[in-house]
Length: 192
Length: 333
Image 1 (tube, rainbow over the protein chains, first blue to last red):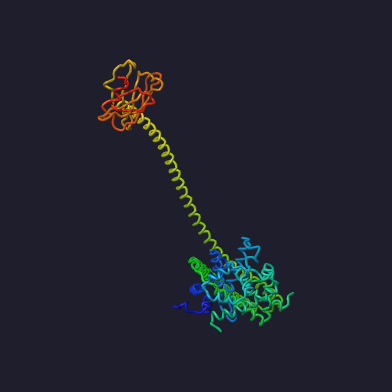
Image 2 (tube, each protein chain N blue to C red):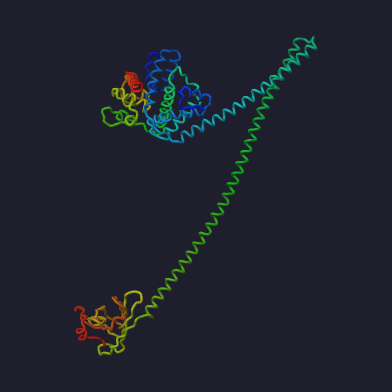
């Protein structure tokens, strides 16, 4: 009798490739809450988040064999899919509801003390690592991360909305990712 | 056309999901041909994914797990059916191929035995036979497909029949329900009519009771006729007065007649005489006809009084129920 809880992600994925539904259930139990949590924090819509989570795991079921371990961790593959799918849904929702604010600059006024929705989501996160990781970013870098990661804006949209040159936005994104990497390594792996 | 350096500048945005489709495609094409660039991008993607994994957990609805597992199990079922069908087709293809080989061997033996035929003629004939064989294989294949299709068609027909039967049952149920509703509606209408009849009866009963009350008022009176009633010069000798008591309410009625209208500034007053001092009951005047009924409140049963006095007094004087006073005042007795 296989205890699927004890299998690694890759072992589970191998079983899933052989159409093993128990392995799939174990993988869902391992990551379902995080995928749903990610979608819920970005979409702020339980029903849509459920749809996104279902799509992500069905993709794991049907396309799990396309994951190549040499190219990265399984979680990188999984959360890449999850974030992309969530952002797609967010953009679709915005198109449908036209809920996009015309004045993004005001919404993300870094001089203001007002907490913006994604900031609130992260501030409320039970994951201290995320809070700590974001704390290391200077405000302008944190702004571009928020707008792209949590608000689904393209770098061009960020540039237009904030009035920053596109090159500046790109540079800030690059610097932000570097600092995030260091911060996450410290938080997750305890690297000095 | 973007230079590679420019595309590489877009890597962070790609990792954050912040590129439009064209720029995204350019990145994907670059990393196919540049392993170093691919490695750089992979690191950024990993950073964002690690960040995603840390954003937070939320408990999804329980139905989500159930739905997912149902979907994948159904998927497994479909795959198994597809595999079985595929195996069947492969098996049949092998059988057909084997038959073809036997046929070919027989043809070869035939030609060996005959010999001497022109090579071109043999080839033409062999080609024709081969064509026939291919057509035969296709026919067999089509036949197999047809058998499967027929099986599925039969299954669909069976399911359609079941669905039709279920629909018919449902329609029958609906018809029964409609009948029941119609019956219920008829009963409600009948009950409505019954309520109207009862209301009419109730109204009639009320009217009857009112009549009875009126009758009771008149017949069950506790009549008091003053024993001291005497003709007086001041009043008509035809005069009369008696008291009635309402049997349900604390009301008395003075029925009086043959008394002239009081002069200006004067009025008649009724005093009830009990064991103690007389009680002032009401002031009244007569109409031009000299008769009428005066209602007044009773604080106790009429038969608890010994008698009554009707006086005519100045309206400006307050009622004085003392016996001495009454004796000295006009009374129509």
